[in-house]
Length: 140
Length: 75
Image 1 (tube, rainbow over the protein chains, first blue to last red):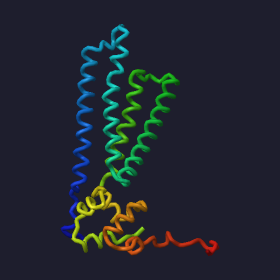
Image 2 (image 1 turned 90 degrees about the horizontal axis):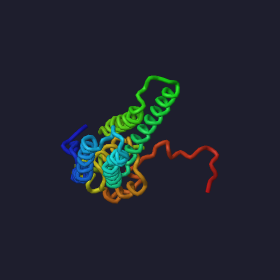
Image 3 (image 1 turned 45 degrees about the horizontal axis):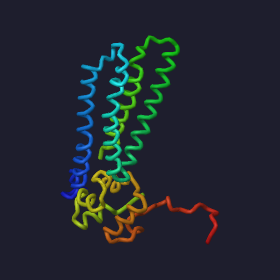
Image 4 (image 1 turned 60 degrees about the vertical axis):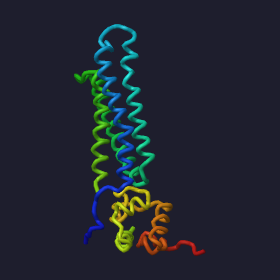
């Protein structure tokens, strides 16, 4: 049995938390995009300047801001939302570890895997499973 | 654990979103509580009871979860 009181729209608190998260997350992602473009344009990662290592590490700074946005979002969320996030993070951690071990062993066995892509495959496995499991557990 | 949160919320004339704001949780959390997908922590259960002006045991029914195993020492 449903009634008008069973509407599924977000609460005022939900909207406020979403806005606050976006205020943290959007500038961090924008900064990441700008830094990655800058590194690609001026970083000279394929060259032989010793500064290329500093350039290569530069995107870590805005990624730190993304991590901060997620952490602040978690602090603002309630106990059930934290439980869902914990489950999603556990699934993505397991996926990243499985991908890491599988790819690492394949590389040792001499499988024709491009070495520069291996960390990104692990990153992709973790990020993709985090997004999917968070979306699946967030329904309702 | 079964509970009467939805029934009591409707009696108060609140939407899930309104109850969520009063409890300072998300609307999704209220839905999970009402459908029995999530059992609240003790502090949240007390907040719910205080807001709905009911004793905790009249809102939440642990059912068989509360059964004491046979042979448990009596106090």
